[in-house]
Amino acid sequence: MQIYMDNAATTPMSDAAVNAMLDCMKNNYGNPSSIHKTGQAARRAIEGSREAVARLIGADKKEVYFTSGGTEADNWAILAAAETGAKKGKKHIISTRFEHHAALHRLERLERQGFEISLLEVHSDGLVRPDELESAIREDTALVTVMYANNEIGTVQPIAELGAVCRSRGVVFHTDAVQAVGQVPIDVNAQNIDMLSLSAHKFHGPKGVGALYCRAGVPLPVFIEGGAQERGRRGGTENVPAIAGMAAALEEACRNMENKAKTVTAMRDRLIDAFAAVPHSRLNGHREKRLPGIASFCFEGVEGEAVLLMLDHAGISASSGSACTSGSLEPSHVLLALGLPHEIAHGSLRLSLSGYNTPEEIEKVIEVLPPIIGRLREISPVWEKIKNGGPN
Amino acid sequence: MYSETVMEHFSSPRNAGKIENADGVGEVGNAQCGDIMRMYLKIDDGVITDAKFNTFGCGAAIATSSMATEMIKGKTVDEALGLTNKAVMEALGGLPSAKMHCSVLAEEAVKAAIEDYLSKKEAV
Image (tube, rainbow over the protein chains, first blue to last red):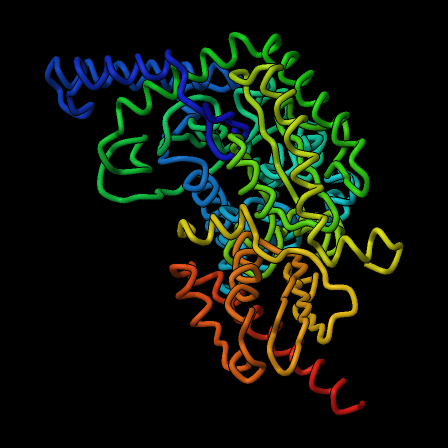
């Protein structure tokens, strides 16, 4: 059977999530906006889910809005803050160089529409510095958006500190927490978070559903016209089964969080230690300040997609930030933001674990990967130059 | 995403390696873009008797290198100069559009190796 180590892309669904969805699809088909009993049963499923999601991130249920996923939540949050800011003449937004494209592409579009965008450095360790955020904030800053944990390299940002900086300067703080929710404890109040995006399929829930948390008092303009759903801000009949599945998945992820994090971290560290022995390889991002499940490596002299295909052939599903997996000639913007040269960034491999992985699977990858790297290096003219000590 | 032929040539590449004292060597691409192909040719009486390659690149880059060397072995230099990226792609059962440049590199690598051979021959 295929060993699945691409959990940062998506996760297998938990039984709890599947059962919640099945139950909903079979027995709770009403339209939550209908006033009859059938509709009201569906309404209760949604509001119960909202309460659960809110509780698990330390929010109030009135502050949680269901969306189609993390990308939509990021777009909504950024557009909301931009619209609100522009009304007060504030047209400056701060983010980071290694955000998800859901944020970066939205910001690029805003830039073309007259906003000014500042992107913070993430340094070679993949971490944003709160003092650099402090100096980047201006009188006209409308929003700071910094991802909680990076999807490619897994580094976890000092969110509470960044939030405190924003709070003290009166700037709205949004975090794309798609990779973090369900993996690490989150409390929007303790961490000074004003807006937060989350996505169900990253924590063993269904695809196509997520949520935006927006603190009470932070303006949230209408995103989709056409209905009273989501407090009139996002029209359209709710995806009841998906929302129920998301809540069930998050309940389970948070219930076992500490134990799961421990075992997953131990497996991740085993991978990191084992691949440190491969010559001319590196771990991307800070060694400790990372999510339990994500480890990203670069192997010099090989190209990431070739490694992926060979791993796949050997029964292991992984991922890479190489150009060839993105359909462009540019390697991942995340790895370039760390300051890695192009030729090294091309040789990246991301292994992302979940509580469903086993130590046996880890040992299998440790056995299989080094010979694959060796085989590709054997036919690589770049490796020949590295091996002979020449300039790469 | 890849055809069976591409996967087969990637998993078991033909002619991977080097030729010592090759009659022609050509290298194209650059590491910054993620693809480098180096071709080695052995040429006797204007006929390519052996071809090998070293490639740094994705699955398509390795498969096109493998296929291109197969296609020029036993051919005359003139015939090999007529090798097109399209022919390499067709022989592989097609490539995704984002990978077309790999077949172009394979064609260019063959041409670069032959040009190296011709320029050495002239110099003698």
